[in-house]
Each structure stands twice: as C-alpha cells, then as structure tokens.
Image 1 (cartoon, helix red, strand yellow):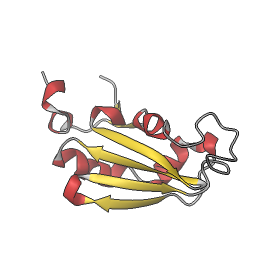
Image 2 (cartoon, one colour):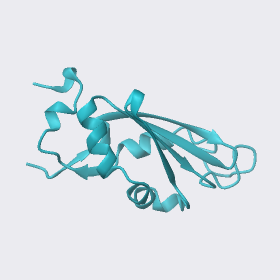
Image 3 (cartoon, rainbow, N blue to C red):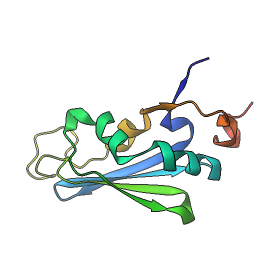
Image 4 (cartoon, rainbow, N blue to C red):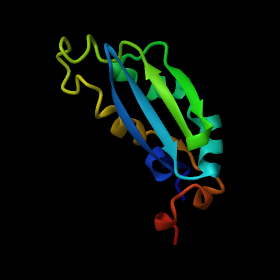
Length: 119
C-alpha cells in the first residue's frame, strides 16, 4: 500500500489572482478531511510544493463553516495578469497544482473521501 495520497482524494480547490498574488481555496469533502488538513496542509508544506513558483509569505486562513482553508500567496504571479509572462498569469491553474500535492496516507482515509469514491 502506498503511504501517501494526493490532496485531490480528500478535497477540491479553486484559485484566482489577487493583483500580483493569488489565493487558493481548498475545501475538504468531509469533516474528517478538514481535521486532517488542519495538521497536514500547512503554509510551509504548500510553499515547498510550489517551490518552483517561489512563493513567499504564504498565509492560511481557516474557514471551518465550509470545511475550507484559504491560502494567500503574495507575489506568486510574478507581476500579475497584465505584467506576468507566465502562462497562468491569473493563477487559475494553481488549484490543480495544489491538488496534486502528496500527503501522508491517513488511517481513516475512507472517512475523508466523498461517498462516490468509497467502495
């Protein structure tokens, strides 16, 4: 058995630009997933995962009412939509990149997945 999972197995995400920065909202499918993400989806881990984009000062804001975390990534768009030469100058693909992040496999994985993924 693999000892890691992709974040996309227990959450979905949305992202977009905020001037020269971006934000990524990560929404857990279940309460168990949200509790797991509180421990495992840290600003430091996200910074390491996106290291090629050189994020600095990543901030995490919990939104427990919707089982989500909003991450603010200042300066990650290298100038923003009108100045950046990056392909994703508006940060729309950041959510997909974040969902590919590897996390330690939790013992209660089935409790974190949507019912459609459970066997």
